[in-house]
Structures are given as C-alpha cells and as structure tokens.
Length: 216
Image (cartoon, rainbow, N blue to C red; front, side):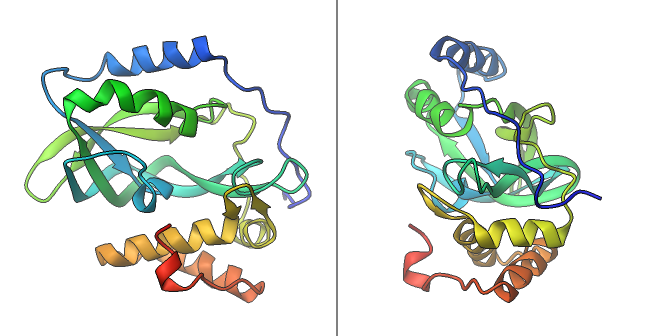
C-alpha cells in the first residue's frame, strides 16, 4: 500500500520550443473556421482567466475528474506537495464549457499552456462535450500517466491528508478542493466523490473559505 510519505520525482520544465510544438500539434484538431470550446472541470471552472463568449454546463463521457496530480508549486511545495485535479479514464464528468471566439484562440493558447502544460502533466485532448442540446468537440486536459507528478495510486485517506496539509503560491490545496465543490454546486451537480473528500479534509481541520472569496 502506498503512503503519503511517497514524494513525486524531480520535475523537468518544458522549454518554450516544446510548448510551442505542443500548441501547434493540439491546434491541428481545431476547425479554424469555428470558435473553440474549452472544457473546464477544476480550477478553470472558477478561475478561467480568459475571454469567452459563452459559458455552458457541460458533460464529457469516458473520463472522470480525480485528484491524481501532485502540485509542487501552485498548491504545495516540492517538500510538501498538494494535489490538484486531472481527467482520468472511466466514468463521466460534469463541468463548464467555454466558447472562445476564433479570433481570440491564438492569443489564448500561450497563457493557457503556461498555466496547464509547463511540466507536461497533461495531454491536451479533443473530447466530445455534451451541452444542453448539442455535442461539440472541446479541448480538455487529460492526465499524462507518465508524468512525474502522477499519483493515481493514492487512496482517499492519503489524498485528504495531502490536501489538508499543503499550501503553495496560489493558496492551499484545500481551498482548491472547496472552490471546485462550490463551482459544481452552482451547476446543481453533486459530485459524491468530491463531497466525501471535502468532508475528510474538513475532519483534518480545514474549512471552506467565506463564500464571497471562493470565486477568486
């Protein structure tokens, strides 16, 4: 059985050239005559940091959200890493879909890759995204199981302990969890797995931030 004493391997940051190659490869799957849809299931739900023309409730099938990625900088440190979300295979996932006007897509990619892809923890993927009355291809960030930060072996008790005890440059791992639960609540979605995890984190002494601060 794994333990929370397990630590992630050293991280190698991707070069600017590697990031640009990744962007170019990803955009080959985009119809440049149409707007781009971006699927959000974690922090992008409550902090998209991009201009969009529409935001809709959405669901993808074949993947589920999971706290399976170490966060060594944003929500933890190398010595005491926190956890953040990624998409793993199996099940389904509710979230938001953002419609990015095609004129804004090129300008969005670099800051988005700086945010999500610096360490190659995700595989940018085009998934079928179900909206209220349509299905659209949407860009989503799926876990890269070969990344040094992948930790899908942790059980719920280990995840709760890691989340409750970690803090990075953007705040605590617990805050990240609570904000995600709050964003899903606004959708009317009860994610049983996340709610159970949030309860375990509260048992460790963490409390959600005041509601007027959760969306920041």
